[in-house]
Length: 124
Image (cartoon, rainbow, N blue to C red; front, side, top):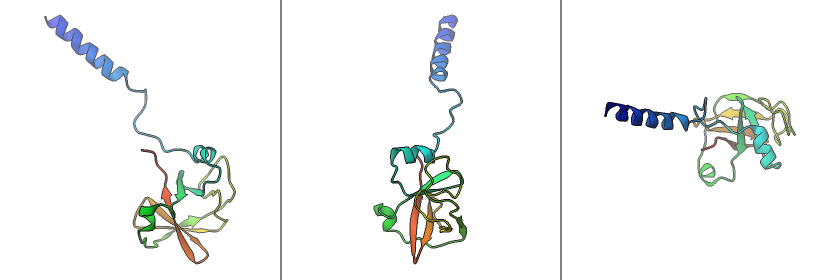
């Protein structure tokens, strides 16, 4: 009887651990290259190795009023389509100032007289 219980226990443990992908800990962020290959008209920039996508047409974002915080940096390269680095953008011009907000998922791009919200792009 003890052998049968032990066998069943080991089978259950084996099934549970065998169904996990090796080394998987959490969902990965989509790469800017993947986003661009899916939509080559996407308006995005990269900050801290994460893509931020223009969110001015997303209803819940448009309904919010974001307070401009400290400047996070400036766009260094525009028209980038591959091998994205921090401060590379697909559309925003070089030297566009990027500002933090109280919402860590939103950054603001200062374009002319307008602050445009950009949403941190994560899967899930």
